[in-house]
Length: 504
Image (cartoon, rainbow, N blue to C red; front, side, top):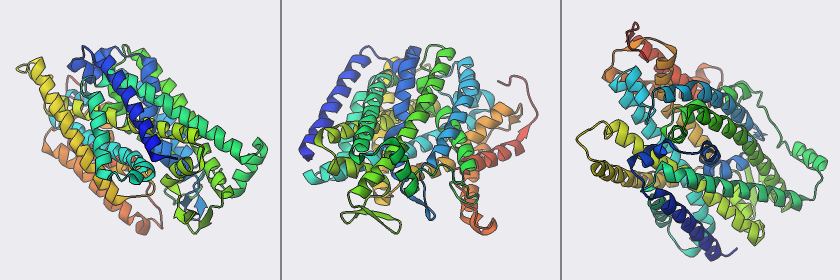
């Protein structure tokens, strides 16, 4: 496959995004950027959120987990336990958090913390969102940029630094004016192409295996790829804690995340926003299953092409293609030109939703929560726009720095890094919102709130290091988020006092 052809496809795709951005950002103002003028279609938001939630991590990393190892066994479909947990978490979002946000008419969801707990809680919550989303979004973005670099741009002699910078400039260009108003439409377009790439690759690979459905299932079982539940209680991937952890991951990374909820609260009514979440959840669960199925098919396909396991490596033509390298490696080197092009379009479609919404949401949160530009009556609309654009550009540069850090780490399974980091960074947010919603107590608002929210992740890190020694080999996995939130909750409870009037 010619790298020049693939590069041309990427440029053509970006041109389409710019055209959509130009069309949707005309007459845009600050409210368009922050909440889409509260006029977004729930159906478009729901469909576009699929691309944002899946991102390049699901597109590349989830298929690769199927033939990766957990101890001495393949992980198989064990990630699906996390996905089932997501379903439970999204129900909480639809029927607990969405009504709360609409009742308070929020632009930033962290304004709830100010109304309920006080200024320090508000600023601390917004700060942890900014940290969480910056790390998570840049990890996702790095994954896809690295795939494009390895399989296309290295062969054209283009350095990684240049690739990352150009892609970030692309994202900056089409989000600069329209913000959420633009992203609702571009995410819909990107989700369409991402799912098209998934479905086409599944059908092509299945056709190349020349197996009937029964024969296919038998081969998958024979290789251990269909393992659904990890029954090892001490393992990081134990199915019960994966489900519980998945539920809280969904609540924290969607329901307490300004990027995801910014799109939801841009919908006209609460009922439509709930329909958005519920329809999005049903499709998300099904699509994640398809990505796992694709992973199993890819490993069978490569085994038929002569790839072999050597220890915990999966070697094809002398190269380890296990994990994140599997899907891109197969698509670019073993598939016909048309299917490879569809894969690249799907991959690029997975790249942009993982960054454009994050960049917009981080800009919104920093401007509204940290700088308070909506509350400052002395600022004109033009001044607010100038500040917003300056912040938007600054976060673009921060994204570039973080991507270069991930390049140095160069881990084979980015999805594991993202879930691990989420346990540390979203835990304080979970603790703050849980305290506010489940109790009627008031905080002694002050720097101690911030200190507690910093101490909780530090305690969790120490616990994760020593859990194996203290608990007979038990490994803390996705449940780290829940533990972190619990520590934060206890700390807040310790500095709280009885209920006072005006609790929201």
